[in-house]
Image (tube, rainbow, N blue to C red; front, top):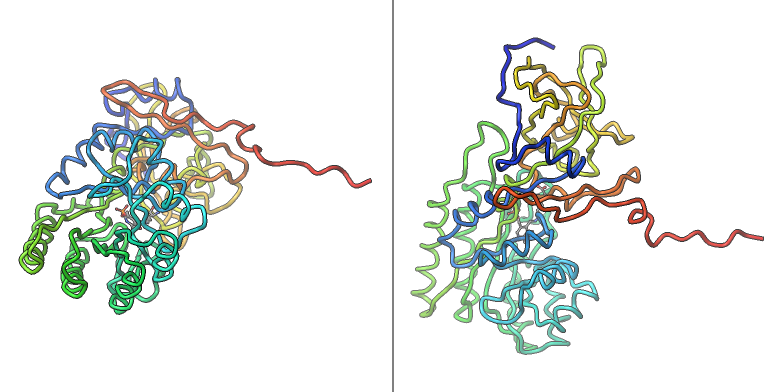
Length: 426
Ligand code: LLP
């Protein structure tokens, strides 16, 4: 542990122009705070694509879905629950392009009933889904999610292509699946590929070539192609932003060649989750203990992997800053380990893949200061759990400088809802 010159680079006092101390005073901790203007900026960045379809699994709060809808962003759902969320946020069904798509590798029974009743477009990820849908709803249009035989993600756990992955229709089975669809009069109006989450331009570019091949094979019924999600965001200080101009050009070139071949217009969809919401989100926690273990200094906060699972799951790096409760931004910095309250040694926010604890340079802190875990808007709240019987965090949206509570903190009653104690044996 070494002292360092005073610095304010890892000190944060406001989010979207709103005082963090006021936010925590009003909403408590742990709380997710989402800056709406960052989401709107990211939507604008993708404006050249014909359709932006939000992969709501990244952050599915109704207020976020409502924002996306008002911004003209369409939505993807991966479960019956996500379809219901989209409907509750005002998305309609039917039409071209379909406002809601259901992209999955199985239909559970609830989801199959729902997509039929509500006329939700299905992006099929397994041959069996073609039969299951065709038997009860022949004559519809569907799209195929194709696994192109390769994939890439920020972690092996987020790589969704290649033979090791359960996702999509294997590219060599395209003809067989087209024939299956034919049997039920299902029209294949589009093809989709998503090779993984948090990948890079090099791998995303390979998808363009793979897509071109399968569309030529599928034939002229195709009117839309989807590039899936996967766009990376800068989590680490030296991570660069993806060259969106270049990415669009690659897809636009594929589109033009396919339009020439097919003789009709083809829409290019993009389906990001992380890119749209990651940078907008902050997890605010209070520092409740500052303690030494030999030469290591730990900050223990009141949020754990029950609130943000990405570090324990993937060794994911999230920027962090200290929010001084006394407003004093001039503090020395130390290399510290940041952990949560859970009764499990892996409850560490500063860890690398494989569970190896890492240190982070952060300003000196005392109990009662706050910690902002940043870039936490994607796959943050949505992956939270009630482990250790901890209630889930509140969510707050800052719109035009005004904070709105968009999800209240869970209560103990929420936690035990549905649990019953059977009568004692006589
Ligand atoms: N489309 C499909 C079909 C997907 O499976 C996914 C992500 C996306 C789009 C959005 O991908 P994105 O643009 O967000 O990379 N929990 C992990 C990420 C899992 C992503 C699963 N599918 C994490 O925290 O990194």
